[in-house]
Amino acid sequence: MQLQPSEVTSILKKEIEGLETTASTESVGQVLQVGDGVARVYGLDDCMMSELLEFSGGVMGMALNLEDDNVGAVLLGDASKVKEGDVVKTTGRVISVPTGMQMVGRVVDALGRPVDGKGAIQAAESDYLPIEQAAPNVIERQPVSEPMQTGIKAIDSMIPIGRGQRELIIGDRQTGKTALILDSILNQKRTGGGDPNHPDQVICIYVAIGQKQSTVVDFARRLEEGGAMPYTIVVNASASEEASMQFIAPYTGTTMAERLRDEGRHLLIAYDDLTKQANAYRQVMLLLRRPPGREAFPGDIFNLHSRLLERSAKVSDGAPKLNPRYKKGGGSLTALPVVETQEGDVSAYIPTNVISITDGQIFLEGDLFYSGVRPAVNVGISVSRVGGAAQTPAMKKVAGGLRINLAQYRELEAFAQFGSDLDKSTQEALTRGARLVELLKQGQYRPLANAAQVVAIFAGTSGALDDVPLDKIAEFEKGFVEFLMDTRAVVMEELNGAKCKWTDEIRDQVKAGLTEFKAQFAAAAAE
Image (cartoon, rainbow, N blue to C red; front, top):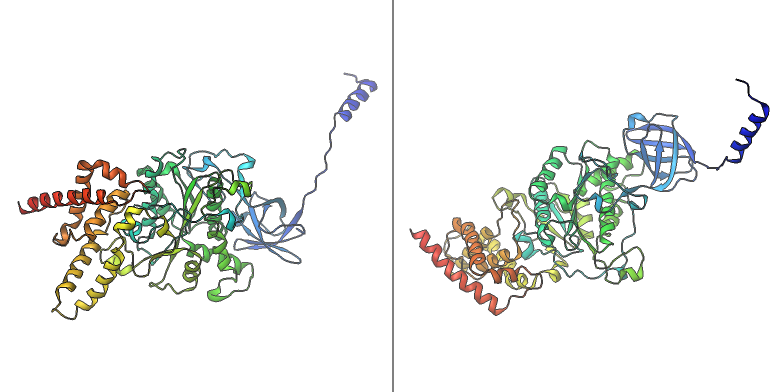
């Protein structure tokens, strides 16, 4: 086949006319040194702090040290794929993760990638938000005023948590810290029936940091069984993952929460636990040659946790007028950070840091846990600094003297061991205290509705349980709540309302029910 020169010319002319050229510049560097999940890169002159870097082999990294002649980066993937001399490119964006309702009901890693085998998550470019964002300022917030109920009697009565609060859960290992979080998440099903699209449904986020994979799988299974997984996101940075993934995981979870909070939703986020995050951050910073401080932690370890927890807030109703970031006002983000102590030492470095950042703490004591008091809440040093304003009026009225009664009981219990001649008032205080301790015990995975808690605590504080045998308290409580649900369903429904007051009429009805049930219970016990 012969081609004419004129044909070739016309073809070339068409191609040249249709040619579109665009010039693009890329900032490219070279790996100087790599090891222990950290790389030093030369040549990235315009690199930003926390910028996402792309290494050859598909491994991503995050720039953390911007020095005169090199950039220190942590690798967010398999470090064995990165070699000295490899090419590194800047991406032009700070590390970002996908957000939105499509994340709810999924288990993801610290970069928002699904790890639950349920397929890819469809996220648009606009759904990607940076993991570090500014916390709401003072004008964009409002005081804590709504209850965030955990379903746990000891907490909702004496250490109440409000929406937008940060309440620390602190205690030694194996004292029930994660169980407390699990029950709190299960209890949120009451807010919107477990439907994530219901506007009142509290969305929950559980950030697992440095835990065994088997522990996280068990946690997710419990959520599935309790019907809580549809409104929960699990962010997993397990012990087998790089230290860099463990230290960014809480920020990932918070960004996912903030997106929904800024759309007017209520969220509960649990960081389990920040001690492991601090250890991972220390590891990364020492490898980057940052100078160590107390307990070898870097100087900004306080800022690591304060800038994370300051992002939890109750957003003002008028926030959208002040800042276009907020699509709808009135949303909230409640944080339950966990810190592990050694031998109950709350005066160590990380515990004191996080105690000073949060709005109160729930201290779980090993001795109480092993003596059968579960949840093992130490009422003496546990406190909620802002949650009292958010407690339901009925609970506030009924549980008013509970803490004092328990404190008196603890004092007298120690004193009573030394002598047997006790006066009548001391014996009464010991009797009442023992029954209140028994009443506040609660089985795992069984969070209670507000009405059930209020009537049970009323039975204890009113003295009605003083003549009930100690080993029958749990049975009495269960039967009493069921009895009221059958005979006084309207009152119980009313008590479940967040604004319900403990009126004389409600008290008289509950008191009458208590008298009736007590007579039945005594008759059944006598048979």
